[in-house]
Image (tube, rainbow, N blue to C red):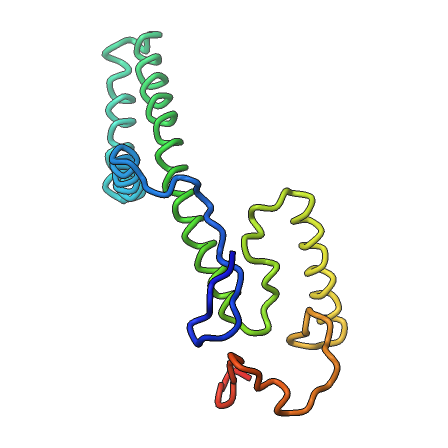
Amino acid sequence: MTTPTKDGGAPRRALPRRNGNRHAGPLRIAFDHFAGKVTQWSGSPFAFGMATGAVLVWLVSGPFFHYSETWQLVINTGTTIVTFLMVFLIQQSQNKDSHAIHLKLDELLWAMEDADNSLVDIEALDEDQIEVIARRYQDLAEHARSTKQSKEKHRKQAPAREPDADKAPGHRSREGDSRR
C-alpha cells in the first residue's frame, strides 16, 4: 500500500498499523485512561510518601501484634497484590508510550531524504533480524571512530550525477537547508 507525499512526489509505502484493532472500545479507552492516571500518580512523591507511611505504620504496629505471622502476612499480602496489579497498569502505559515513540521515529525516517527507510517498523522484525542490523550499525560506528569521521553514509554511494539530475518531479530540494 502506498500513499502520496505531501509535495505531490512519488508515492511512498504507507506506515504499517501496529494494532489490528482500528477502533478502541469504551472498555479499552477507560482502561488506557485509568492506567495512565495510576501510573502517573504512582510515580509521584505523594504516592511514595504514602507507601513509606504504610510501611512505617506496619513496622510500628509490630510490637502490638507481637510480630505474629498474621502481622507479617498483612504486609506480604498487601505488597504482593499491589505489585501484581501495578505490573499490568505500568506495562499498558509503557506499551502506549513505546508505540508513540516508534511512530514518531518512523515519521522521522520517512521525512529524512537520506535515511535508511528499511528501519521503519524495525521493531516488528524478530530478534535475529534486529541483531544483524545492529551489528551493521556497530561496524559503521567502529569504522567512523577508526577513520575519525563524525558521520558516514551508511548506504552505498550512487554514481555521480549531473547537478540537475536530481530535479525529477516530486524531488525535495534541500537548498538553503542549514543542516547540510
